[in-house]
Image 1: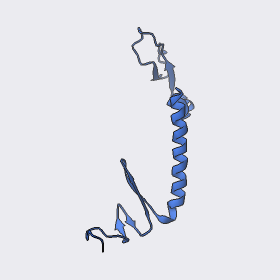
Image 2: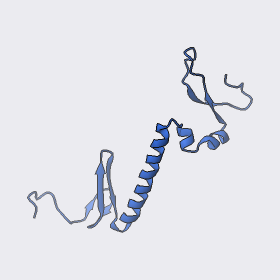
Image 3: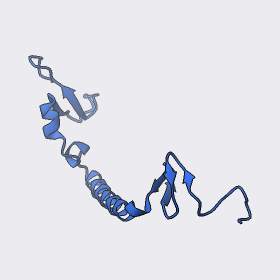
Image 4: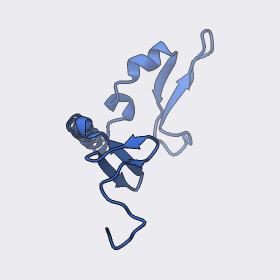
Length: 111
């Protein structure tokens, strides 16, 4: 028995579903996740792939690339009727230097 009788070890417990001995429990500032032992290796591999992809994306952002390009969204936006407009960066132009605008069919072009 542990020094704290209200804390049991190696017994099934519930966290939005049944958990069993051997399950992996991981927590950070964003929350807690439990993974069945049988799925742990696959989940770890997927997490490493995601972490690597995010590191590559951060490098591209640091080089000044737009999320529009990092995430390959230009074609999708075009299909949705959106177009990317980069405005000049002069002090007379008070609009944000990068903006997305929706252009409805037949509407005048954005200056």
